[in-house]
Image (cartoon, rainbow, N blue to C red):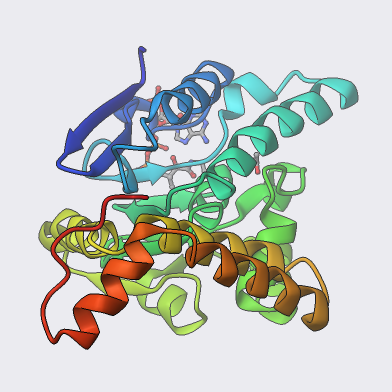
Length: 258
Ligand code: CAA
């Protein structure tokens, strides 16, 4: 891969978008590599993924404007479809994905963070959907995921005004979970990933699935999804160990992902 780095620390997978000279802007090549990087993650061994951008300045400064400029209508739609497929893969990835937003998260970069399950950012992060200033709408899910996360009023303001916001405002409107000093960002993200990785894997996956799928349906259907996934946990050794450990007043020895 030319622009994606992947490393593992214990049971945590770290995916880094590595095109810092162009502020990690997403072109077709990077989108394909990002997709392949997630396909290659061993979801039995790894229990949580952290996604970040290389360099000091940017998480991802958007889709590649150079690649988009001369597209026609069909080409634009195809580009959006490609990005959406990759981001949907991340959103529905069986493992939790934490975005560690280390700088600019604009346009497709903000949308990439939105497709992750949890967002932690540095005090230097800047979020925004500048697309209407470029004559386009957000195309990698921004109109859909931003409104679902921060409400339609906040999404309308950000998308229609193309105003960038800093980390503290992003945190205030619920776009990010936490803000930390830049030098503590990766440690904070890895620590949270480690905490997630220490829990029963089948239950963690089921929790992610229940939240995502439940948000797409009415409350009755959502509760039915939860009941099924809750029930499926009782078929695991990890549920027996988790509850037995509690009743025996001891720590869980180890969750075995079974
Ligand atoms: N596409 C292509 N190249 C980009 C880029 C992008 N989205 N963002 C930054 N770059 C490139 C710049 O062209 C520049 O390249 P050169 O050194 O070869 O000139 C390099 O990265 C560094 O950028 P700047 O010199 O502009 O850095 P800066 O510190 O002065 O400004 C910035 C930083 C404010 C983030 C500015 O780069 C910027 O505004 N970038 C574009 C942000 C944007 O509009 N993103 C949305 C794209 S549209 C989209 O994403 C559609 C969608 O929903 C799918």
